[in-house]
Length: 162
Image 1 (cartoon, rainbow, N blue to C red):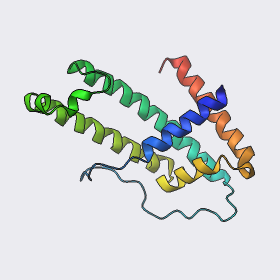
Image 2 (tube, rainbow, N blue to C red):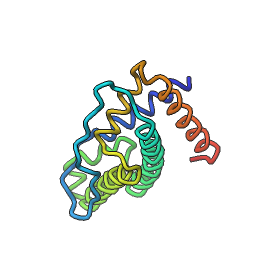
Image 3 (cartoon, rainbow, N blue to C red):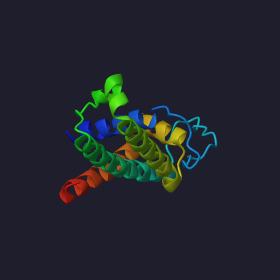
Image 4 (cartoon, helix red, strand yellow):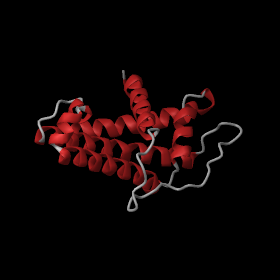
């Protein structure tokens, strides 16, 4: 069960971080743009694993904060959980501020996710590569360490009630 939750966390992070951005904001922090070149032997180095773990932890915190902000936004504007109202042109015409707040919330989330890479000192390309390389048998020991660290972090968050 822990392995499944770990793999779901990795999949969620990859999906969120792989989403295209909706235009650049002048004040938006961008992750490093240096091109990451994976090692030919596909071995994850210790420093990469540590940066990956740090970015994954920070990402989880941002996601939890975003979920709280999104629920608050939905309650404030009496939106359904799928926010289908934001696709309704009549609703948007009558409530233009709701769409603007939704865009601001999404921009906030993207800026937070971008800053995760900066704080963890890992590019999004390297983060994605490490996440994929964790499934290679050559990286089994590192995968077990990453899984252990992230599961401990998830348990810690659960104890705190996040």
